[in-house]
Image (tube, rainbow, N blue to C red; front, side, top):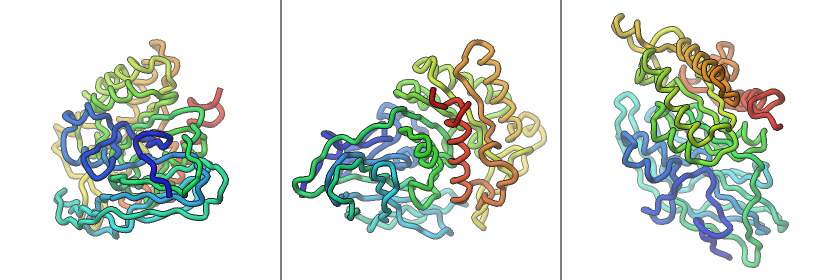
Length: 382
């Protein structure tokens, strides 16, 4: 068998902006190294290290692939644990799935937002067979809900290995947990995967569960990252954490867009407002977990509620900001109402009153592909 280097040569790790070499191999991270001192807490550091949208890509004639890896997953107490999933995509088609045989698991109590246990795992082999002898583009998509230490990749003796082909356009997406999709049971069930596959684009997913707060270091990251298409799905985490008010959100969004435009002055840039969330449509956050696994809002003093954001106000502010900037000359800036992706009529597919179930995620991906990449959409092919 041939042993292949994972961070050089014909093998590429796509969808990651940094590789951490502190473990046994290389661990993909979805923000560049320089952002590390600015990441505010361990929760965001954990989501940055989770490999949503990250894949190992190569072109090979090998009839099988083996990947030695150590996955570290986060498990919310009270929910069933499903081992992290690796999926093989061959020439653009999902071919097979393999679960991490021996993951480490961090158990978190959501009511206390605290670690309550840790199960140590180790390096294990994920194997994909039956690929035939012809050359094909292979991508091993890593779990959305785990960080992964990639140790070794192997192919058959004598097999050809060259770089995998690239799709013609690159799409960079920023968002919250609904973009991160850490609660899906396989990479191909995440809506950015579904939309990117339908549109035939290369995606980099900067969806960070609970951490989409218009952070300036993320704006600078997007500014400095090559991309043909950019989308920002913003607003819901500001409501979940009550981290901004009606006074601060508009200027913060303007500042984020100003920074992105420094590096991408004419790139098609789509701002997407929150999908339907019955908890905060007309009342402010924060949202908090409950013992039954769902979320609820808490009552806030009337004086605070008067200046607080709601889902409706966030959507209105996004629309107003985009229209104003379009009027000032930004003809490649667009807005998309999140209710067109997942609306009131889809509420039954919010399994915890906040996050979609697999059917809901698929619907979002299919609708985003149609509205953003389809005829007349801001990302439609010219």
